[in-house]
Length: 328
Image (tube, rainbow, N blue to C red; front, side, top):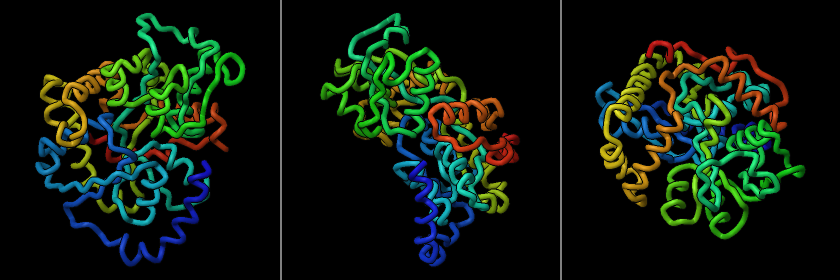
């Protein structure tokens, strides 16, 4: 929340430069997409790129890695990006700051947390009750992965400082290194890191956290209301291409999908890419509709509230715009 409170100041400082440079409109067929991180978690989007589905729709995608939701939101607000791929909590935070022209969520790509709880031993019949007295690395306090894991642990009767230790001292990007280095009994990791640890015998997946937490609008496509109004047809084409990518994953052997995605993850073995895809399919992380449901939006606010990161609840229609997604 502190990052987003600072966002208003960043936007003010960048405003003059944005008018001169960042707000230069992209070409009619270009969509500048800024993603929160580069991950196999977003495979349908990458498949659409690799298979030429965007080109079939007459679109050119310029993809950049924002390295965090706060940076993606700044890119949107300063006109450096047309579309942001991030959690919908970013729009909630900006709205609660009182900004009138806050970006809207117009579609979702993933419907669950994409991280897996990794332990130091193989546990075929894992139960969360076994975490009593354990030291769990959580990631950044207030970050969505940490909030969801806290929610799951609380739902199983586990409380920080009571019957379990929730360690927020390690940033999410450094969780793998900390765990391999001997810190903590369990750690939440996204793919391909979870599969890599299993391959190296440094850790073992015991639970899909997203399956435990339920369906939420975890990673969403977001844009300013002006951009959506002026580019509704282009956004419809964009979403149609992404959902072709999702269908391709469902209809194609995963070894072929892994080979297709490998150029986008050159430092990862094809077997790890395939294992990551398999884990995500089995965890049902990708949504079969781009429309964000009211129930999912309610749950994500429950999770934020549980973590003490939500100052007040926000109406569904305030953040979510289903006009375009409902056509797909």
